[in-house]
Image (cartoon, rainbow, N blue to C red; front, side):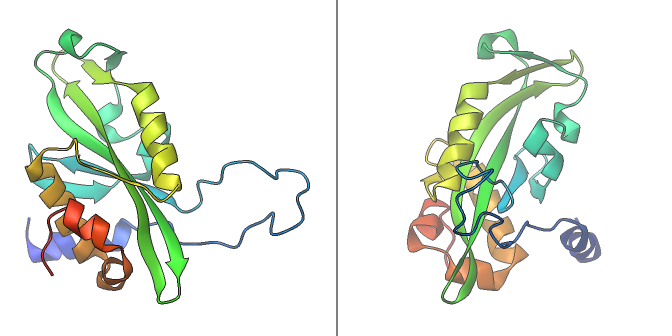
Length: 175
């Protein structure tokens, strides 16, 4: 990918950054609901050496997820290519926004045969952990972690700088 393409992708792929809490202190209608306003989804594609924001993945509508039939058993998709949907939660700290929670969920997609593997319980659990500020990437392959780390650090240097050392260490990205 050329620098121009990367620059153009950066402009159209944006993270959802903090909005005011609509339930700030009142505890009325909607209190106790989960807000996904600060959550973004990143597709990590180790096959094509790239990572990119795809907000459609929040509703299982990303380009890679379309026009395939899902199977809960990985063995049903023996020729599936590995992808990761990474749930990224952004919070605001004293120094500004930072990547607070990051959790990767596996996908195996076989487009020619219109088959895919996805564990919905895993995706839901990982999304919840990201919302709670947890880092869950240890099960990801090293290449995918490196792609994700490079993407996050390059996307917004300030957010990356404000992020925890735990995240930086987990993604093996040297500063």
